[in-house]
Structure formats: structure tokens, C-alpha cells
Length: 390
Image 1 (cartoon, helix red, strand yellow):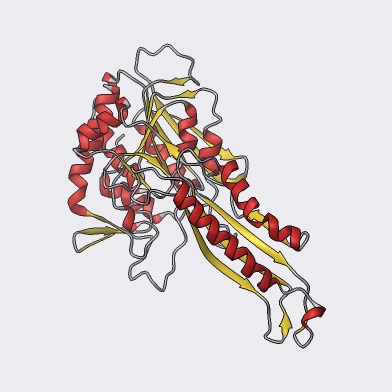
Image 2: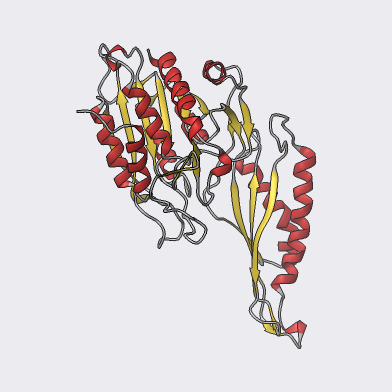
């Protein structure tokens, strides 16, 4: 029995909604995507393990493995070889901004449109297509396909898989959209809410309350000082933006012009460089607001909006980076966004991010893959698999 062709697999994956969202009204299971991938992998001879996430019921990881014929390891052991990894979920979409059906793979203007076309369901169609053209009976090293859940929200799938006791690949390629340029390092991501609890009252008597907006003004002053300190203190030249960033992203507070504001909340985004731990960054943030909390006892609360994602640091001289540079003809780079790499790396494998499509299309209306990239990408992925496993 054969698996569908490249475009048929692509269409099937795009047609299966698997949105991850903090809003439960939008949040969907990825089970249908996982089931299809597992069926195709089993047809190619892979042994498949589907696991429901402990912290996200209804969400699933797939671990598919193909060992060389002469491999004598225990069936559950997955040591050595190459792992090809990606996430099966997508971000939510705004139907008013999409001009096409996000769940139909649409070919027009020499582009393939669809939600997840490059971020990142399409990657699985690419790697399965590459495997169809290989004699898997000649496999010399284990080959693993990992499909995770909830990368776009909590990264719970990657955080669970990195605890797998028997999974020890030598190399891992995460197929996020990089235009097939290898990425060896990236920043982390921390989103926090800063909540000010004051005391409401009538605006005609300022002393009758404590204005949370005024306290937030003091907090913002401290945050802007911290922002500049991060820029002045830390720098890694590999990055286009070489310093850690701090963004004031969203603020709301109060309910009426004639009422003293009793509560104000600010959401911020911080992107640490490799070498700055999440614990260190959280300590810096707390130190920045500590003086104000002493002036207004227990008025300032700092809350993580999601589990922080650490930065990822690889080596430019690793064997996998050198292979990826040879295959792609591109030097490995650093990027400012984050991926599942810091969790996957905990398995002890050389790790890079390298996949089809441009990051500029990720999370955008009318997301697409440029069709002229298909054949070169297929060729590169096939070469990476051959040189790692055959």
C-alpha cells in the first residue's frame, strides 16, 4: 500500500483544523492530524507511538521510529540517528482577513495557500515525500519523526517529549520555516502581566483612593530603565537585534473618567539572549518593580502569562550545522523568534531549525509557500536524510 502523493498529503493536513489557543472556544484537538501522520508512517514501515499530553487532554504527540533491519535494541529504545521534528498545531485565524479558505490548499499565483502551509504542517508532507523516494531497507541509522502538540501556546508537547527516557537521537532537525537556511541559535520568550491593585473612589476626592494608573506610570518608568539596561549590558553579534528586548504590548485599566482607577494591568514581552536564564530575567523584572511595591505595599503583582521559553544555543561547528550548511549553501544564522529547540535539545542531540517557507508568512493571513521552493526543498531534505541515516 502506498501513501498519498506530496500535494495530496499537503491538502489533507491543511484540511484538518488543529488550532491551539488560550481561549478554549478556539482551542481544538490535533488528533486527526496525528492519526493521518501515523497511518502514513506505518505504511512506510515506521513503528508509531501516540501519547496524550498530561497537561493538555485531547492533545497528542506522535513518535514514529524506523530502525535499521539489523538493529538489536529493545523495541522501545530509540538511540542514535536523525529525528525530524515539527508541531501539528496552528495559530487561530481571522476569517475577515483571509481572502481564501484557510482549510483548503489553494494553488494560485505560483503559491500554495493554507493555514499551516509553512507553519508548519507542510514540513511533514515534505519529509514523507522524501522518504517515498528512498530504499528504507538500506537504512543504516535510526530515523525518527516527531509530531508535537501545542507549540503555538504552551509548548506542552515538546516539554513532555523531552522527558522521554528512551529517546536519544544523535541529530534533530526542526522544520520551522527558515527558507531552508540552518538556524543554530535563537532567543527565548517570556510574557508577563504586571497588575496594579489600587483603591477605587470618587474622582472629586483623590485622597479617597489609590490610583492604579498613576502607580503603573511609575512602573513603566522603571521598565523603560530596565529595557535600556538590557540593551547596554548584553550583546551577541550573531543576532540581527543583538540585545535582549522588552516590549510594552498591552495595557488596560479603569472604567470611568470620574472614578479613581482601582486596577490596571500591563502585558509585556521579553526576549532573552542565550546565556541569560529565565530565572535571571524574572529576578531583573521583580527588582525593577520592588521599590514601588515597597512604596505601595502589595500593590504590584508580576504574573507569567505562559511558561517562559528559554533561549536555544547550538554550536556553529557541530557536525549537523556543517552538513546543513553544505546541503543548503547557506551559513547558519541566529534568529529572534523562538521554537521547541531548547526542549528537544535536552534529549542530548545536536539540534538545528531548518524548514520550508519564510518566517515572514508565519501567523499571517493568506499564509503561503512559494511553489518555486518545492523542488529545491525536497532535494535538500532528502540529502539531509541520506547523509545522516544511509
